[in-house]
Amino acid sequence: MLLANVSVSPSVRDTARRAFDGACEELGLGDFSLDVAKRERLAQEMERLVCKGERDPVVLQRTAVSQFKYSESDVIA
Image (tube, rainbow, N blue to C red):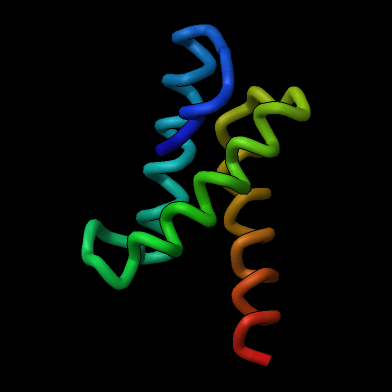
């Protein structure tokens, strides 16, 4: 799911995975069926950031969470 379509080094993949896991925890997204679509959207946001060159796990997590929350507010409105 995360970085499935992106060619990156194993260390970048590991960094993104840790940031993704932290973001899922922060957002309360589990492995439940209701959360699968949300986790996919979060993974897409994380992938976009990695493709833009972001490698700092703290920045990846913070930015992905922020963008995810912003996109959720658009869905609710």
